[in-house]
Amino acid sequence: MAKMTNAKKSLLAIVIALLVASSGLMALFSGNLGKKNASVNFIRVACVGDSITEGSGYPANLQIMLGANYQVEAFGVSGSTVLLNSDRPYLNQTACKTSKVFQPSIVILMLGTNDAKITPSEFIDNFLDDYKKLISEYQALASNPEIWLVKPPPILENDFDLSDTNLQQDVIPQIDQIANELDLPTIDVNAALTPYPEYLMDGVHPSSEGAALIANEINQAITRTNVSPAPF
Image (cartoon, rainbow, N blue to C red; front, side):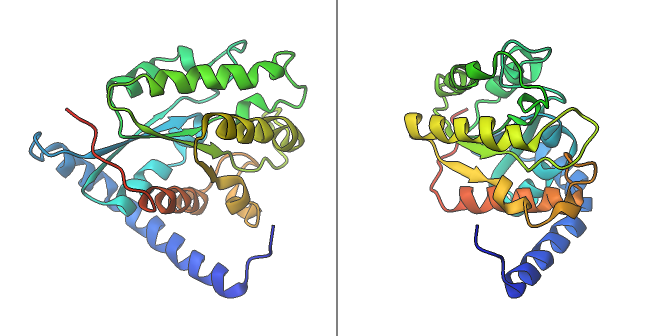
């Protein structure tokens, strides 16, 4: 990957700082959102994932960036996986069902981190088929959502038994393969966060700055495309 220039880093730092400062307004914004006329056709964005989605706050930053025409909801489940032969496959979680009831216009899928165990699962070769099965659940929705596959953040030294080597060699190549086979767009959060190891607080979970950077990458992807509101 080409090195980021100092000018680009400075600009990105300003964007991130503004997002982090703005995130304090999210609770107020969300409250006002609920009071809006129910007839408004929002572009509904479902952020699907693991603890990075559930706990980082990136969906809140994304809501701020996208603005009032969008409704962003987080459907993250800590510890969840793509693999169905695990303790917590996302497909079996209540949040998965809730995200489908939401009838999103856009689905942001950021999973795979918990599949990158230091000792790879004996079922890692099932990742391709298991991820396709999850994707098919969203492709079958009446809202016909646009689906984005996110390459998860890099993994640094950590206490969660997770390996960046396995993420880079096993998980991300299979995400790329799925994207190619199903003709789905990707968002490379992995590459975006690689120059900023300080944004991964415990080697896995992003800081507020990291969450803002993730939101910025996703926002840029969404706003480059024309998405219609999901029907009510």
